[in-house]
Structures are given as structure tokens and as C-alpha cells.
Amino acid sequence: MKLIVNGDDFGRSQQINRAIERAHRDGVLNSASLMVAGATAVDAIEIARRNPNLSIGLHLVVVDGPTVLGAPFANRPVRLGLRYQLNQTARQALSREIEAQFETFARSGLPMAHIDGHQHMHMHPAVFDLIVPLAEKFGAQRVRIVRDDLPLALRGNRRRVVSKVASAMVFASLSRRCFRCIRGTSLWSCDRTYGFFQSGTMDEPYVLSVLGQVKPPAEIYFHPTEGERIDSLGPNPTDLRTLLSARIRTAVQTIQAAVLVPASSLDDVSWTHV
View (cartoon, rainbow, N blue to C red):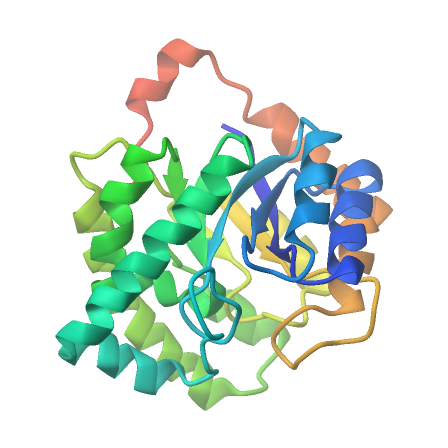
């Protein structure tokens, strides 16, 4: 199974779209997550069509971003998370919006390789319970369940250490629940997903440290853009430079060559963390 190197926010802006195509053609990017209601989603779909080796998934937006059916979601994840959990009317509206995003992706004609979410809100229990049956219905293969390596991240960067530790505790609980939810379904998830603790600063030294210990199947995700940094944890030019790095390319190619296995042996691979 390949090492998945993913670019998030595909379709959010022209600068992001260009960065993802460049990182795929000239770098190591082999996957991207499409924001179907993004301002440049149509352009992103055309890029995907002319790059058939670029795997495309749905970047579900239920916070801080555009919607298919109504006004944009506010950047208030805690407040929205509580509403989704406690307010039945909000959950009904959420269900309609999520289904509309799946249907919009399907109309593109692109195979839906995976599902993930903006700010990882797809892992919220009220959201995840809605997306699992839809992911199966629309033919998705994989769902991103965040399980990053905190000690590795802190060795290279101790900024925001308190928030990183707190986030690790929250997402450890969420990831266990999500893995339980996909048991018995057609969906799978990588055991490790790197990028959460270094979001917005996926520089070459950190990614080389990940590549030095990664055990596929695993995902490393980025937020590349050719433009200026959009926010502290989001699209930034550093991620693009890392994806285009010759040292990164060599390391990824070495890993990819080492993990090629016969299809008959895949039954022995454990996709989930117990």
C-alpha cells in the first residue's frame, strides 16, 4: 500500500489549486482533498481530470468554510460542535448539507478515493455517524482518522505545547471511536496520519523525520499554496517547498519501493488501531 501524501483545501483558491497541481507533477503529492463548494472547485476538478494519477477525495466542510446549501459556516468549532451534538434541528440541517456535498462531488464524475474534513470536524461524533453510510453509498474507500505522533512533533517543535497535548487527548478519544465505527464497513483508515501537530509548518526537517520512521499504510497531509500564508495552521508556501524538495522526493521514493507487496498479502494487513 502506498504512502499517501495529501494536499488539503483543493478548490479553495487558485493559488492552492496551482500549488497542488505543481506538487503532484513536480513533487511527491499523490492525493488531494476537494472542497466542493470552494470558490475555485470547478478549476480544481479540471486539474484532477488532467492529472488522472492524482487521487481525489472529499474535503467535507462543516465549519469555517463555504457550503453547498446556504451561508458559510463560521469559524467556531466548539460552538458548532455543541450545536451538532445537542440541537436536533441543527443536526437535520447538518445532514442535508453533508449529503449535498457528497452529491456535488459525485456530479464531478471523479472517483471518490477518501473522505476527510476541514479542521477535522468530520471526526465529531454527530458528523462521523452521518458520513460513514454516505461514504459507503458513494463509493469512498478510505476515511481520515487523525492519529499523529505527538512525541515526534514535540522533538522538533515545542511551540503550542499545551494546546498540542490537550488536542492529543481529545483526538485520541475521537480516533478510538471512529475506528470502532468503521469496523464491519467497507471503509479503512491509515493507522498513522501525520500533519496534525505541525499543521501550517510542514517543513523539510520535520517531514524527513516522519519519513525516517513511517510505516505504511500511512498518510502525511499538507496545506500547500503558491500565495501568501492564509492562516497560522492552514495553506502556506512552506508546505509547497517541502513537497517539491529533492530530499523529500528521494525519501518518499525509497519508502514506496520498499512497501510494494503482492495483492494476496493485503488480507494480513491490519488497517485499524485497537
